[in-house]
Amino acid sequence: MLLFAVCSSCHEQQKRDFFSGPEVNIDLDAIRKRGYINALVDNNSISYFIYKGHPMGYEYELLQLLAKHLNVTLKIKVTSGVEPAIQQLNKGEGDIIAFPLTINKARRKQVTFTRPHFNTYQVLVQRKPSNWKRLMLNQLEENMIRNPADLIGKEVHVIKGTSYEIRLKNLSEELGGDIIIKEDTITAESESLIRKVALGEIDYTVADHTMARVNSAYYPNLDVNTVLSVPQQIAWAVRSNSPELVKEIDTWLGKIKADATFMVIYNRYFKSPRTSLVRMNSDYSSFGGNKLSPYDEMIKVGAESLGWDWRLLASVVYQESKFTLHSESWAGAKGLMQLMPATAKRFGAKDLSDPQQSIHAGVNYLKYLDKYWMKSVSDPAERLKFVLASYNAGLAHIIDARKLCRKYKKDPNVWDENVEYFLLKKSEPKYYRDPVTNAGYCKCEEPVNYVKDVLDRFEQYKYHIKLPAFDEQAVENLKTAR
Image (cartoon, rainbow, N blue to C red; front, side, top):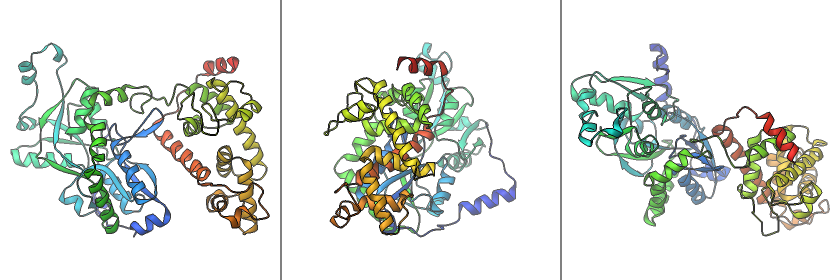
């Protein structure tokens, strides 16, 4: 484990950086004007994770509702450690820290807290003896630390800058003896130390009781019943110069708590340990495994053929069908890749209920679109956006938007704020009736959002799903079967 150690001058510089105020002035009006809110989230089994290809979590679900309330889109940035998150917030890299933050005086100097979500308290996370299953309750209790004074002289590991570190320091003062506080790296994930206790790498850490309780269902050898603090308030945070944003968030929180929406989400993650255990053990959870769907190997074959990262193609498949094989749209598109029957036949699929055929045809269609756009859009990153939009809306509307770009002196080879802009304009008579266009009216928010959603999900998949060693034999088998 890496312990936190810096020279005194570096430590003072870090303190100055941490205690600096906002470096940007972005409040609610600016967020609404640009159309999105940047949320900084922690990666753990409660706040934010991927399950069966879909982002989930207490913070994530609430953030989705908040973005809808603000009438903006949500952008997620995963970060670890409270201090780095506060620095990123004040630099403008995020607009809200959606962590389960404990409200305290030190943090109030740096951020403005929202109204509290709920109350919690800190507990000691310790390991039961190896023979705990054979012990009577009273015997088990004798092996556990129940009096905080028994922590004097013992090493307790915490992440630097957290409320847990502060609590241990205060507890040492209260007890009149030193608890040996071992500071882990400030970028460690919030659950990493709980996992280390369970695996026997360290003996003790401190955690919020709600998160500790969920993890104790996953690691039954953990004991989380020793309370170390009085009840504490948990909240999110925004920059201190964003008064209108925090006011609107507080208004929204009041509304969802009043109609029970909040408690439904809270109970889903904090009061359902069995469900949490299923998710954490699942091969399709970013915590229990490294898979997105039952079709991952087929997707990898298709992605290799395309020259894509397989997680990008997986994001397309999820966008189309949510990995549901027998999905069918109102228009008659079918299968994992949601192809119309005529398109499917053209690109090599006779039976769209066959996942292999569906992916094979979808990949061939994507290849066709990439070859088409390669003639005019040379930059691969830009071309990808044209390919995705065309897969969703068809070539004709994208070609029209490029013609409008040329007419109005925009760049027809750049997607953002150029082709994308005129695609959105195709719902207005002035533009869809323009003599340069051929495809007519288009309510084209869908392909514009499609591009954003696929690429945003790809970023989430890249963070959560590691690239495994490629199984060449499995690939050859699938190619032969196809």
